Amino acid sequence: QVQLVESGGGLVQAGGSLRLSCVASRIIFRLSAMGWYRQAPGKQRELVATITPYSTTNYADSVKGRFTISRDNTKNTVWLQMNSLKPEDTAVYYCNGYPQFGSWGQGTQVTVSS
Image (cartoon, rainbow, N blue to C red):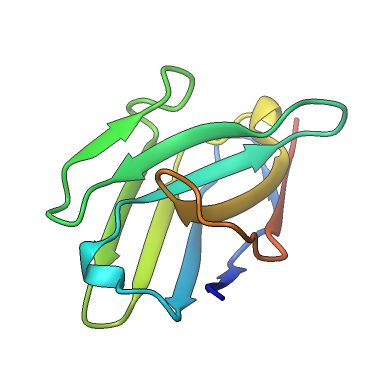
Protein backbone atom coordinates (compact mmCIF):
# COMPACT_ATOMS: atom_id res chain seq x y z
CA GLN A 1 0.00 0.00 0.00
CA VAL A 2 1.31 3.43 -0.91
CA GLN A 3 2.61 5.56 1.92
CA LEU A 4 2.50 9.35 1.77
CA VAL A 5 4.02 11.55 4.46
CA GLU A 6 3.37 15.28 4.28
CA SER A 7 5.17 17.93 6.30
CA GLY A 8 5.97 21.62 6.37
CA GLY A 9 2.67 23.15 7.36
CA GLY A 10 2.24 25.76 10.05
CA LEU A 11 0.81 29.10 11.05
CA VAL A 12 1.76 32.06 8.90
CA GLN A 13 0.52 35.58 8.41
CA ALA A 14 -1.18 36.64 5.19
CA GLY A 15 1.43 37.38 2.55
CA GLY A 16 3.85 34.86 3.99
CA SER A 17 5.28 31.67 2.53
CA LEU A 18 5.49 27.99 3.35
CA ARG A 19 7.04 25.01 1.62
CA LEU A 20 5.30 21.69 1.94
CA SER A 21 7.03 18.36 1.37
CA CYS A 22 5.67 14.92 0.64
CA VAL A 23 7.66 11.72 0.60
CA ALA A 24 6.05 8.79 -1.15
CA SER A 25 6.94 5.13 -0.81
CA ARG A 26 5.73 1.79 -2.12
CA ILE A 27 5.04 3.26 -5.54
CA ILE A 28 7.04 3.67 -8.70
CA PHE A 29 7.34 7.36 -8.02
CA ARG A 30 9.20 8.32 -11.17
CA LEU A 31 6.30 7.03 -13.28
CA SER A 32 3.55 8.63 -11.19
CA ALA A 33 1.85 11.93 -11.74
CA MET A 34 1.43 13.59 -8.36
CA GLY A 35 -0.86 16.21 -6.96
CA TRP A 36 -1.38 18.44 -3.97
CA TYR A 37 -4.88 18.64 -2.60
CA ARG A 38 -6.40 20.59 0.26
CA GLN A 39 -9.46 20.42 2.43
CA ALA A 40 -10.73 23.42 4.31
CA PRO A 41 -13.15 23.05 7.26
CA GLY A 42 -16.64 22.26 6.06
CA LYS A 43 -15.53 21.97 2.43
CA GLN A 44 -14.76 19.16 0.04
CA ARG A 45 -11.20 18.24 -0.75
CA GLU A 46 -9.97 20.08 -3.83
CA LEU A 47 -7.09 19.68 -6.23
CA VAL A 48 -4.51 22.44 -5.96
CA ALA A 49 -1.68 21.47 -8.30
CA THR A 50 -0.41 18.56 -10.34
CA ILE A 51 2.91 17.50 -11.78
CA THR A 52 3.61 14.81 -14.34
CA PRO A 53 6.57 12.43 -14.17
CA TYR A 54 8.37 14.81 -16.54
CA SER A 55 7.52 17.86 -14.40
CA THR A 56 4.77 19.40 -16.48
CA THR A 57 2.65 21.34 -14.01
CA ASN A 58 -0.89 22.56 -13.71
CA TYR A 59 -2.61 24.70 -11.07
CA ALA A 60 -6.02 25.58 -9.82
CA ASP A 61 -6.97 29.12 -10.76
CA SER A 62 -7.11 30.10 -7.09
CA VAL A 63 -3.38 29.43 -6.59
CA LYS A 64 -1.95 30.13 -10.03
CA GLY A 65 0.99 32.50 -9.84
CA ARG A 66 1.40 31.98 -6.08
CA PHE A 67 2.09 28.25 -5.67
CA THR A 68 4.74 26.12 -7.35
CA ILE A 69 4.78 22.34 -7.42
CA SER A 70 8.03 20.49 -8.02
CA ARG A 71 9.47 17.03 -7.61
CA ASP A 72 12.67 15.04 -7.28
CA ASN A 73 12.31 11.53 -8.63
CA THR A 74 15.57 10.45 -6.96
CA LYS A 75 14.12 11.32 -3.55
CA ASN A 76 10.50 10.22 -4.11
CA THR A 77 9.56 13.72 -2.99
CA VAL A 78 7.14 16.35 -4.22
CA TRP A 79 7.04 19.89 -2.86
CA LEU A 80 4.57 22.74 -2.87
CA GLN A 81 6.05 26.19 -2.51
CA MET A 82 3.32 28.56 -1.37
CA ASN A 83 3.88 32.30 -1.58
CA SER A 84 1.61 35.28 -0.99
CA LEU A 85 -0.58 33.16 1.23
CA LYS A 86 -4.15 34.25 1.91
CA PRO A 87 -6.50 33.35 4.75
CA GLU A 88 -8.57 31.35 2.26
CA ASP A 89 -5.58 29.06 1.74
CA THR A 90 -6.13 27.74 5.26
CA ALA A 91 -6.69 23.99 4.99
CA VAL A 92 -5.18 20.59 5.55
CA TYR A 93 -2.92 19.87 2.60
CA TYR A 94 -2.38 16.38 1.23
CA CYS A 95 -0.34 14.91 -1.54
CA ASN A 96 -1.50 11.97 -3.59
CA GLY A 97 -1.27 10.59 -7.04
CA TYR A 98 -3.11 12.11 -9.97
CA PRO A 99 -5.33 10.23 -10.29
CA GLN A 100 -5.42 9.43 -6.62
CA PHE A 101 -4.00 6.32 -5.07
CA GLY A 102 -6.20 4.30 -2.74
CA SER A 103 -4.94 5.78 0.52
CA TRP A 104 -4.16 9.20 1.94
CA GLY A 105 -1.51 10.44 4.31
CA GLN A 106 -2.20 12.39 7.47
CA GLY A 107 -1.87 15.72 5.72
CA THR A 108 -0.27 18.89 7.04
CA GLN A 109 -2.19 21.83 8.46
CA VAL A 110 -1.70 25.25 6.94
CA THR A 111 -3.22 28.18 8.76
CA VAL A 112 -3.01 31.69 7.35
CA SER A 113 -3.95 34.51 9.68
CA SER A 114 -5.21 37.86 8.43
